[in-house]
Length: 171
Image 1 (cartoon, rainbow, N blue to C red):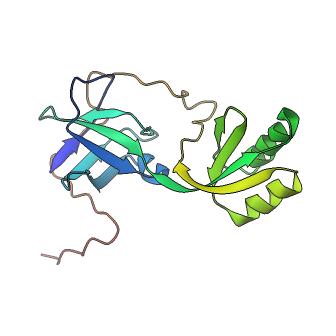
Image 2: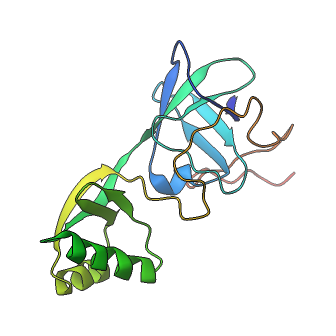
């Protein structure tokens, strides 16, 4: 199994893609499958968020591009900047992750939040789109650093389980 643990700033070639929804790009230990069908293990420091376009590598030098998977989201627009700012305030007040873009917000689909936003005068449109929420005031923004080494210690022997894997029989 390919193990990915180091973020790169750039690469001359890409050996595969890893398509993941935001929920999985937040995990520090993950077993996933590349677009080629190969299983990979990902090890990052707790709190690391993989963003669409990030490049990862491991011991064998292969490079994998992270792709933000389309997921169920709402695109939130408002009649003017002040109304959109009010929507952002109320979403933040509910600790809702939001992607901030030029003229709109994007949030995960949630019927309760949709009703609240309609009540604030917003237009809420369901769409399947990559979700890239803000990292937060203390999360370091969207900076991409080449750490020059592993993002986290790589365990010598650790099995990474994913939902749906059959349980191994106890020895």
